Length: 285
Image 1 (cartoon, rainbow, N blue to C red):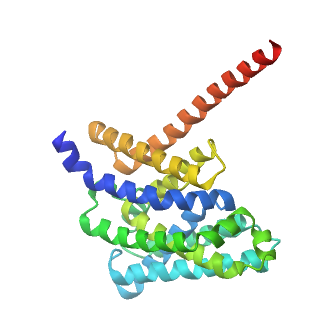
Image 2: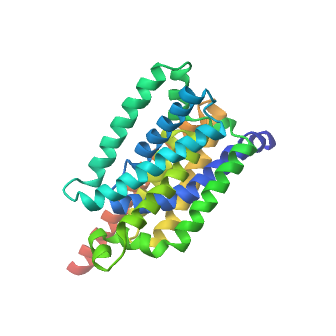
């Protein structure tokens, strides 16, 4: 048991940190119907980091590469915010999909020109969750805390836009400014999270716990609590499974988050049927 805690304490801490911030972001992502925002932002960030590697000959984990990755995500955030407002005929999800495709094409082209390209792709997808260190978690915690504080202080305009974009605009809210800030914060969080766990795991933390919460309530507070509990349970089960079965930590956590979603959906559907049947019996009586 002591060995298990010693090996998994940092990966578990990383999962809890990602559950906290990505779970909250996931509620907004589902409300805004921008499901693939994390993949697009992660790809844009990767393009920025690869560009720094090729032009400045720096390592992908260097400060300069990180700054280039964040700079690329801020440009993408501004692009998403402006396009959504100025080109209403183009759905935001289509804009995000096009951005992902172009960024992926650019990244693949540049990776082909650099050494270690395949290793970079593998790490970006699956991450290295089991081998995170205190330094990695410290920087991620700082980024998550900054974004979390902004989400808390600006929660009202963010929720107004998530609940109804056009209504928020009609009420006089500067939707371009607040959308830019939202996407910029998403970019900061996703860039830091992908370095910890990879795109696949980040996508699962962003979408699956929030989806589970949608099965129980429409209230923000209840959904946030369910999201955090679901993320923590999936993390614990996935990390224990990876330790005993010698599987990849990130893949195991992603797998168990998916299993949890299926289990909760089936269980809720079964209990829902029983409740409906009981109501029909009572009415007939």
